[in-house]
Amino acid sequence: MPQPSHIHLAYADRFRCIGPACEDTCCQGWTVPVDQASWEKYQRLPASPLRALIDTSILRTPLPEDAPQHQQHPPFATIRMDSANQCPLLTADRLCAIHAELGEEMLSHTCKTYPRIVHSQGGLREESLALSCPEAARLVLLSPDLFIPPHQPELPVPPGHVPDSLTQPAPPPLPPNFAPIRDTVLALVLNRSYPLWQRLFLLSILCRRLDAIARGELKRPVPEFLADFGATVATGALRPAMDSLPGDPKAQLDVVLRLAGLMLHKSNIRPRFVECIQAFTTGIGNGPGSTLESLTAHYNFAHDRYFQPFFRYHPHVLENYLVNTILRCQFPFGKEGMRPAALPEMSREFALLTAQLTLVKGLLIGVAGFHRDRFAEAHVVHAVQAAAKHFEHHPEFLSMAHVLLVESQMEGARGIAVLLRNGTEPTPFSRPAPALPSAETPAPQP
Image 1 (cartoon, helix red, strand yellow):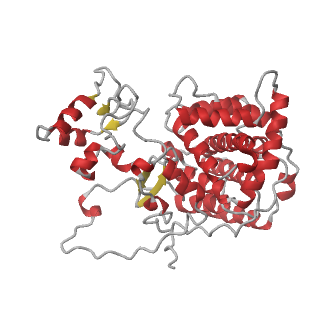
Image 2: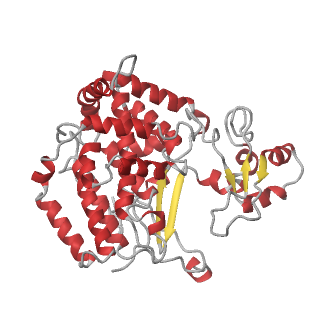
Image 3: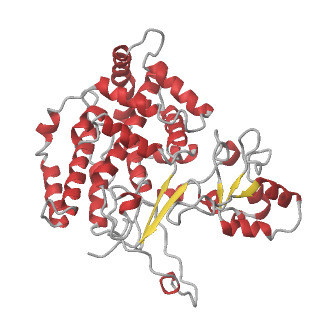
């Protein structure tokens, strides 16, 4: 089976920073790393007010002499935030002084690429977007045609051009069967003949079976298993069993509340996240004397009256969120599972995906209950962006979320019905989900 040369989900190319028009800033509240190559370029700059500002704002990171070699090293340098916890290199109109005076080529790697997230391995280049950027969140969440690639004519090859493959070491290969597994995952997520929670339930079965094959417990070739799995999905043979699984909104809300509280003492609490949490808690009826039972009643009402009608007409929002998360997290292999000769833990990666969707969906149900009939796309973007900025960039969040699901006994397939099922999900009022281009075939031309 030929390996793909690139994936055709090119939506990250559409992103354009809106600068001072942005309602948030990516230059506040974070530790912003600066790579060694950029540091060295800054040291060669001539004396100037900007050079003086760089010297006082970008600090080398000391590396402990006794740090183990296998331990992840801290960034080479970081930007020291000012008293407002904001990048001191921002101009009065919230633009980057380095970019304005010296050009994009002088930006550090992080500042140049954010919010784009790029994974390159074995001839495959995948790009996603960090939804902590409001404009990236708008692009990903609100585009009903996010996965339809724009036509891009081939550029002529310059005379004397030497391909990178001849001048650079070959990257590590992709894991076995990467392309058909990834294509199966993405096609399932976008299969609107099933309600979203059932697509996730089927995805959990897929991951468990693939883990069993990898461990040698299930003696089947992966391509053969994927073909049979696709046939089972197409016939709907598992629908009766899934329809009989009961939901448990009280247990679901309990997990949402615990997930939302994970990082309260480990991450900076930003005003936009405070607004999101206040809307969520108000929307589920939090107040003096409230109990989990009373909160669940409000939670159910908010889902049925305000959340569900909106997402019935906008089913692409959560689908786009899932696909972007799949690319960002290299699901179902994960970062560790993409390493050469690694044994992926796809069931664990599925639990992490579930935790993220459960948190986002739960917050949106509460936010919908707060805004009621005024609940709109702008509120979705605000909530998802604020949550992404608070949770996704913290290195401990996913591990803590996985522990929470395990302790709650929600990491298995049946936990999916509890975490993601809310009453009856009607057929979406929208055109069918777009056919996702295969990672192995050319993108369709307009």
